[in-house]
Image (cartoon, rainbow, N blue to C red; front, side):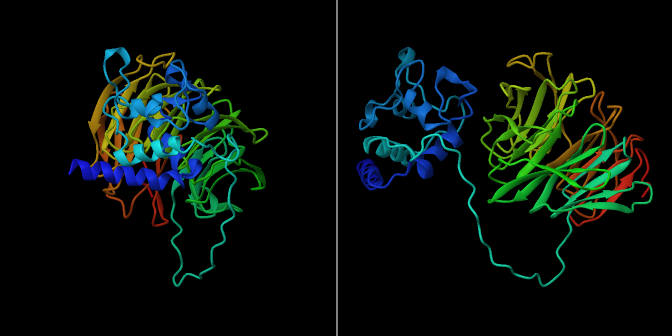
Length: 437
């Protein structure tokens, strides 16, 4: 049996040697298994894999690839657990992280043995492809799902994120004041600038392109288009000084943008899954991110340097929000729990301790929202429940009525009223104690 297995791997290697494509077959393996620890902004052992040039340069232990000689390549030795470093064999990725299966290592070895050829342009950014899809008229009116909501106390408006547009609504009479249009695909995240003058939205077409747009609140006129994500964006946060916005997408990247020019300021790489949630610390110096890779990460702003990876979650993380004083961080996701971390002033690795891990819902948590005074935390989940918590001790304050559908859109007004937007296209406003609308 062992001999048959080795023969099958040899056949795989022989087949791959003739046709391995670095960009299509090898680079995605680095993205999935390696760049969390080996990206240019924070490379363990000074070895980065986020560009072909960095890969071939190697790290502090020397060259990682010996073209034509896979078994002599240091990278392969680590992947196979035969590095011999420190008198013992080490496997990469380290710890309990998922290791590459034998067929994937065989693919990498075949690529190296064939000459370790890189992409045609080693460090070129991928160009978005124009995708032409047939136009098929729906047989029934499509749902106008609400994926996100935001509230601005400065302009007293609610923003609801729907497919292809954002609606600005008067919270008193619930009348739509204006529609912000010209958006391609689903709007997954929405936010106001601190002063309320600008509305930002992020979303796009899944598998095709990420879209980030801004409009002038007063008249709905379009302002800027922030271009760079290669897949749909799901997270959006505005810095407290309104100079930056951060967006996260299914492409596993976080991008920082200049709100005045629309230009990209920094690219934050390190997550191995979609970026679902973002939150700036109130002082604007730290950004928190929640990802499908089961981690929450902390980043230095404006440099984008990764400060810490909080790895206690056991399933996809969907939302993060800083406390009003910035000393604690709330996070939640698919493991049904709300976690609270104490965040140090520097937020550096090893200085941010977990305080609480609270089982909160019977279903995966979709979103969190913090009241303006910081005393209340709202959570919503796939079991269609909506709950309020005291932030001081994370005790449940009040369970609200079960929702008609999932409620991914959550926001508080300045009067601690809770806005809940649902995927069935409806929304409600709740008082902190009793339902009002």
